[in-house]
Length: 229
Image (cartoon, rainbow, N blue to C red):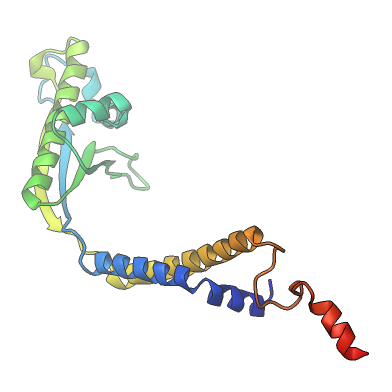
């Protein structure tokens, strides 16, 4: 399609472009006035027991300690774990992020700390969601040690290193507006061209009216021939 044909097709289907502009305006309003979102974040750490009489094989101060903690994270990330969190009242968007405390000398995940994040419309709801996730995480760690028949005095525990703190999220409005404008431009042009092609195919002769090369009206060719004689 040549640039001239593109311009003529867009002029014929100007109403499609108007609809795209209206949708873009609605999207711009949503970007300029977004719904409030709060991100709450907390950090927990798995601590080994302070005992020497009943050693806990899962609580070695080497990567196995972190491996056990990460196994609990994997359990919560599974479909069954997600269903358990929903049953506990956890909704919205949440993330379980094992913190990488490794360096060039110490192994990765040597300190089994976990960052828990949750997004909610209100700050109190976000903090509550994080606390519920911590409760489920602690229960899973306890159940894992119960299955291994580890005595209560030799069990690992979960310590709250950083309490839940909610912060309002504010995105970059200029990027959002640029994205809305780009989507409206591409989507509007594509919809206009598709509509034009569809309507042209349905029209008898398969050519838009007013285009060069359109079929002459019946009886016009004989009249032109008679005038030339």
